[in-house]
Image (tube, rainbow, N blue to C red; front, side, top):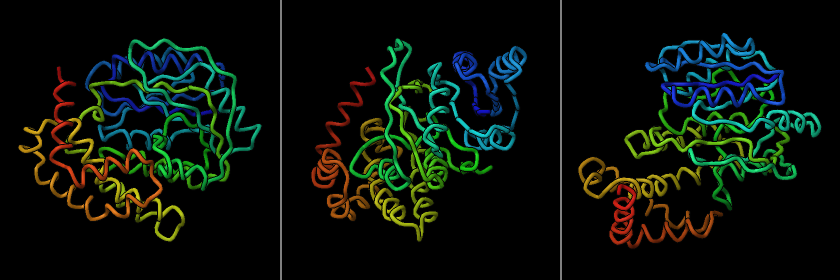
Length: 326
């Protein structure tokens, strides 16, 4: 059995679509765990109605504590041999669990992942390509996870099927507001010996402009703590610790770039001036390390521009922010 864990908080607009995409899977041996993270809208009512209509669905209510705590609560009661996470404003292709599961058995893998596509309400599902896969050992896949020689975004816990033994009960830290998936997903991947990556687009990540990750806020600075923690938990494990340390240095650049491309200069001066100066200072201190590191060339160019031509670069990024707001 596959346990599919769906945490939800005030997603009444999207929850039905998400759950329908799971119940309509061609693979039927499912346990669907809906975790109500203290919703104040109609999400809880919708979830209870869904649970009444399908015996595979369980709905549990927990006090509002964030998506990490909700996922952990789902893990505690999951009884499947395999675990999958789906966020409540996203949805999955109707064949994806079957393909992930069959591939896992055929290749004797510990973890199988599919491709994730960012979409909006206008997206129309495209015909499936011929299924292909690529096999990785732990270290090969962690190079992708830590963005070594690439800029792929694969640290999310979704779009993956895990063997149950990779998933601990408190996998996700619940005291972090953003970026908690980096730590939890790393812990799961670190225990896998064989990982298979399918070319199938099986997970649709809905670009919800109301979500916490759509805008820059004080929460974004939690990413500094995330990578401090990643350095700590990888201590003595190589090449993991080397990669984590590189990303700790790079997070100053990531946050600074995110800030100046999402927040106006006026708001930065008002709310984030001190953080901006510290991020720039810290990035300049590790500039040489970053420029020599195995990261993609376009990122190195942007790091150089921010370190040496920050006022001009920030000015043009501010124009981009104003254009987005129109």
